[in-house]
Length: 153
Image (cartoon, rainbow, N blue to C red; front, side):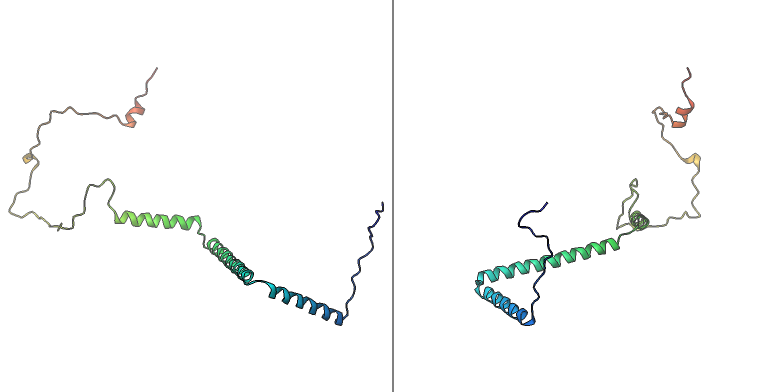
């Protein structure tokens, strides 16, 4: 199917001589300089600000890429993170009291050793007096008691 006005032949470009190429380049340079001189200072400032923004965006992107590369290189393995966590926990526990402890640190406390003297008699169990209690004992069933007493049907 042929369409009128459309040629399928090969497109040949005209070969330029050095003199023609020099004339063409000179003409393009003149047009470029004329265009550059015709631009107002406002356009020049605008163009400079656009160039500055592009430059800043380029460097910001480059820096962000470098940071992401550094982060990916410095990723720690799960084992390393676990060891660091355990070390921090151990240091924390060494420097703090047990949570169930009621002991408080007193800066004015000075420990004193009280040794029994040889002249004093030792305390015997018979000498100790325990006050009488009117309370009834309370029995709390343990899990082993609960398991051993299964209801039989």
